[in-house]
Length: 276
Image 1: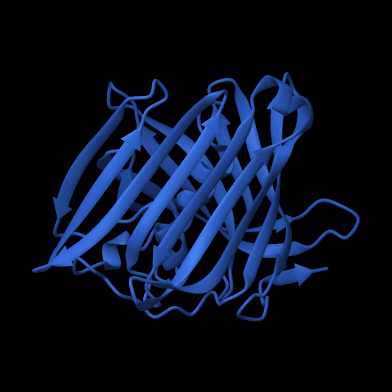
Image 2: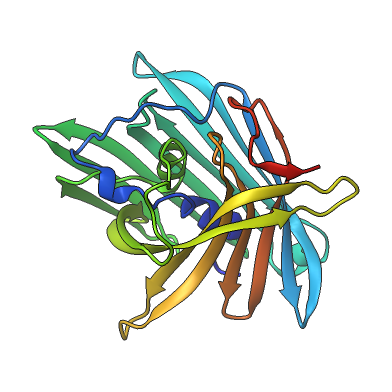
């Protein structure tokens, strides 16, 4: 489990609207989230055909200020527990700060995974229709690398991309549609691909199951030989909140899943609920 399960899952959800970005800053009107939102998840891992509880994750959003200007701050905290913790310990904290129009300003990921500590920091600068990303990355062996990457396209980190795309809508998408997007990760900026799978219903687990109408997407990445692999499939609510309720990750040694456990402080009615 070399990568943080929910970080990968959540960071790639709803990135299908990259083609709508027209300028380096790409401001949008936020219609999906508000100050005080909290999403809690339970993580699972499949080991030799047996599903094991892997841990928890929490995503919170609040109003803040950054260098004297109004902003939002989203924090994602993931923790392994139980038997998984004895096999692979994960203690990760991600923070993204962005304007009310969801233009990213700062990002930091601190990750303690499998006994190795890494951090990734991104500071965004905007000038003359260009975005400059100053990226600092601490590798697992302790090396720190820095890079200044410039682009005329919109570039985002994992969390700001997710929060921004929640205000987009997929009404014009057709099943099987493929969309490229630009993502800053580590000390690089890279192109990835997302494919729309259509609309499906998903029922949560537990004593009080809820059935949601969801938009389903898959995230694809290429290996060194250029062959595509489906890495993540995710289910997001087909309403104005656009929250992920189920996420599946294909790993080299198994399958991981994340299920929404609770959602509070939502901005909009949950009209995607089919049955509860």
